[in-house]
Image (cartoon, rainbow, N blue to C red; front, top):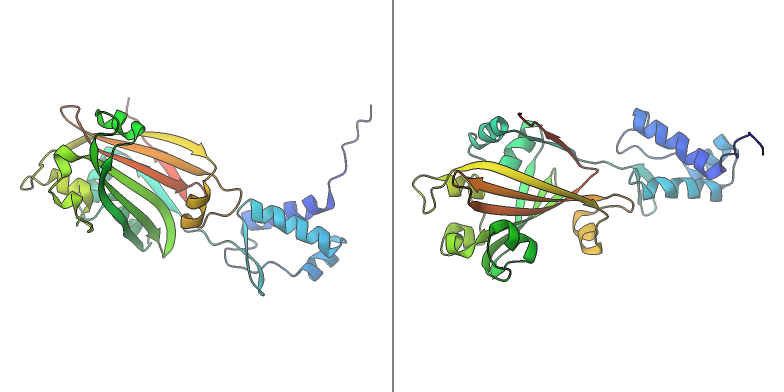
Amino acid sequence: MSLNPAPEHPFKRVANELRAEILRGDLAPGDKIPSENSLAERFGVTRTTVRKGIALLHAEGLVTSHQGKGGFVRERPHVNLRQTGSIYRARRGTGKSNFTAEAEAQGQRPKQIIREVVETSAPEKVAGLLGIEPGAPVVARRLLFTVDESPMQLVDGYYAAAMAAGTRIAEPKLIKGGVNAYIEDPDGPIGRRIVQFIEDLDIRMPYPHEAERLEIPAGVPVARVFRTAYDSAGDVLEVLDSIVPCDRHAFRYVIDV
């Protein structure tokens, strides 16, 4: 048996060297990828081989194409989602929602867009987290979060109808400070303090409608994050079901033991 490794496919050599340049920052976000002709000459391969190499980088979400303009290093807004109780309270102290305050603290321009606010039947997973029967009525608030005008998250918030119906949570309007601020407002109709969040993450490939709405390129997975908010009595006040592209977020959890 030969101990010599199999030769590297030429298109993979093209992809590997360009990927290394992108990851090092030699080719920065927004930079144009060299032309097929120049890359073919540089690597001593055909333009077809170059196209296959660049296609591999497309599939990895590193490169995007613009009709008639060629390939470019993909620009990706990035939010570092840090999860600690002190950070949550500090962000809440700004009077803005946690996501908005966190993104602004990182020098970005966040925005929340309401897709839909409806009273509907609780999906089985949500019902289990809320502690209600599947199909029981809930208020669902479906939002799109953007940063610097780029889509970042699809966020569906669920609230037991017994708590949320007839309140501002059920209205198709943004709430100053976010729903958590409204829930905790001592002068509001709910007036309950959130003391704990539990998050469950599932990493998978996006479904077609998610990829379309979030402009996710081929090859990029998403995190589906269920975030459950509890009060001091152990009752669930909110369940967030979020679809988060993994190439645009970094998660950091601090667990005090």
